[in-house]
Image (cartoon, rainbow over all chains, first blue to last red; front, top):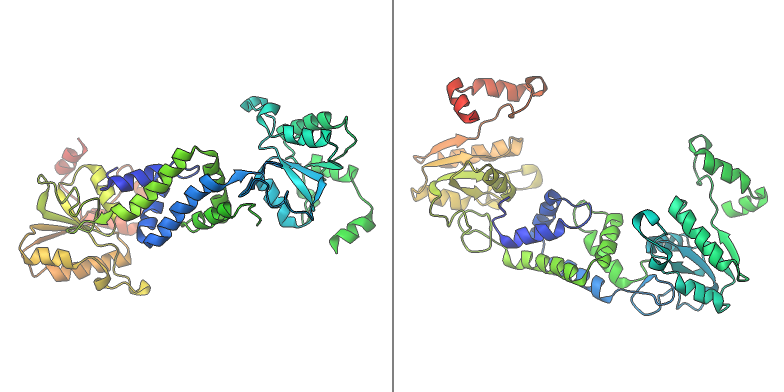
Length: 207
Length: 207
């Protein structure tokens, strides 16, 4: 491809390295940027540099943060003894969006996956064990995805934490709110029956 | 959405302004960049700044260029009296890819479209008229898309240039090489019959 400009070619090369963006899309994006105001392109460019240089991982929970302690860990109104363990920072965002959880998080940064060569030592687990050993935790909620790897990781952490006097819980699996029963898979349906709750309690949650 | 980091949020905002990229994709791209080496992110960031600051439009043809005259216009082995008029710089890339055209280009930067409020004065037309008036042109090939707007623009330029002693041609429309006749639309099929060429000439093109 003749790009007429080595700067255009370089930009297309760089943009084309992003996941899910091929060369045709990269060219379309580069030509879009060429048509924008200089300030707008600078603003995008600076935001990418800032992203890489200024965003760090929270020392306590592994969440993304601008400071040593993330906003959630540093918030005195959050219950520091109630920890929700998640795979990924996107899970933190998803749970925060519900506005229902008042504890803190612990972000593993992945799940145990022998197929991909990811073992417990590759994950952010040590900090959670230390908090447990220091007697700081009252309850740990396992909120990993219900994949083989997620379940394995949950079981691994369960074995590590069960010797302490901590309540260990897992998020409920069941039929999603608004879903039809006929379209649910059997395992989810079976679990939702096994883990049924008093009707009056479910009424309270709907209001 | 709680991004835990204002730099992450800013980056997602900026990336999400690109065409065809929503906030979820923007977040995925931002998190991808966070996992990359610092050098890689800097390289992407700089290539965007360079793109906007260093790429200019060729003074002669309107193509993208790093210098005042683009590589094609500045190439002495290209026929400066044979001009192919196209809508967009992507069309230049596409024709250059064929390796068949040895003249130069003229990039309009769009087509006449009353619906979008684009008139002849919004397009890069004046330079082409000037070249015609200076007697620099032997043949002008119209290579606009075969849309209503493309045809209108071609006709407008035809009227402007017909008073000069210039051969005015249009690229051939017909059945694409490798295509089945049964899937072609009737207008294309009709045109390909009207504009039929001697079989011996077509034999020569296949070899």
